[in-house]
Image 1 (cartoon, helix red, strand yellow):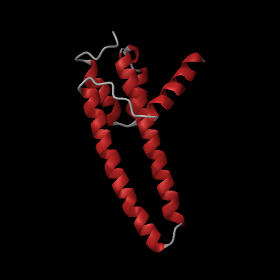
Image 2 (cartoon, one colour; image 1 turned 45 degrees about the vertical axis):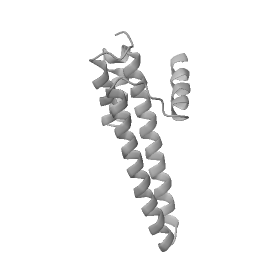
Image 3 (cartoon, rainbow, N blue to C red; image 1 turned 30 degrees about the horizontal axis):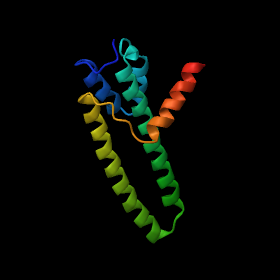
Image 4 (cartoon, rainbow, N blue to C red; image 1 turned 45 degrees about the horizontal axis):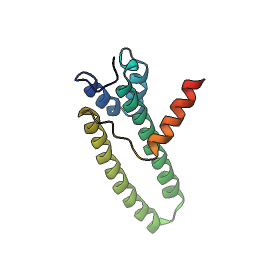
Length: 122
């Protein structure tokens, strides 16, 4: 495949986000999509976004578990709002991939690119 966002690759790039890191990993290795740079970009970003969201959930879970009652309730409310914002952003990422846009999540995309570059060098 040629790396530009063709009609067939845009829905596949969007699907890379649907199952979070699982579909991201699948599309990194599933032929012929593993040869398409647009799909690979969104698959890597899907993995990075999923891992970041999971890490945020762990941090909230730890603090909610150790804080006393009123703070626990406040933090639980904040967690709901953060999850809502992340879910809306996740839908935006799906939309951007589906429309053929190579939207980079600031900072996260740089981290993912560095990791991908290191693994390609080995």
